[in-house]
Every structure is written in structure tokens, then in C-alpha cells.
Image (cartoon, rainbow, N blue to C red; front, side, top):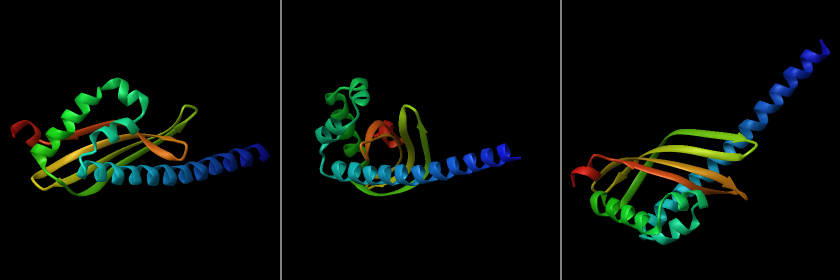
Amino acid sequence: MAIARRLVLGATLSLTLSSCNFAEASGLADRAVEQFHTQYAAEQWSAMYDAADPGFRRATSAADWSALMAAVRRKLGAFQSTSRGNVNVVSGTGGTTVAQSFDTTFTDGHATEQFRWVISDGRAVLLGYNISSPLLITR
């Protein structure tokens, strides 16, 4: 009986700690998305790239990143607003990552943005970015 109580208490404590971690990590990622859109508005493509995780920078070059962001700006226009959809926080021995999906409105259309962040030293660092809109193909 005492072992069962300890297991239940341990599981409850684990869930409580995970939910605190979820809120903190999700909040850090939300602030990072705000920063991302501020930099997008200022066309600070290099700053966005330089602040990203090394894994992100290995996956794409600075020139390709700048070309992508310039194309998004040219085809969709200026950022207006965003509404968060799904959030997934995963914590493990390798650290914490946050995946988020947003419905984003630009002056010339809508897109779905997906961000993947790694939480490092109390901040969210860009690990992956995907934007999807038919306008990116047809314009």
C-alpha cells in the first residue's frame, strides 16, 4: 500500500513539474515568435539567422534564409497579426523543445507558420521554421 501511494505521489509530482515546464517553455516560445515577427517587420533576416540554433544554420545557408524571407515579404506583405493553434512541449534528457503552429495574417494574404524552438539558457532559440500559403506558389 505504501509503495502504491509513493508511485501515485511520484506520478502526480511529475505531472505537476511537467505542467510548470510547459507553461514556462510555451511562454518563452510565444515571446520568441513576437520577436521573430518584429524582426520580420524590420526585414532583419540576418539577425534572425544569426540568433538561430546551430542545427538550423547547418540546415540552411544565410543566403537561402534571406531569400526565403524576402520572398515571403514580397508575396504576402507585411505582418499584421497571428493566432496560435497547436503547441507541443517535449522535455527530456536532451532538453526541451517547443513546436507551435500559427494562423498568420499578412497585408496580402494568410499563411500557416510552424516554429520549432529549443529552450536554452532561459530563452527560446529557433530550431526550425516552415511557412505554408498557396500565395507563395501562385504569386
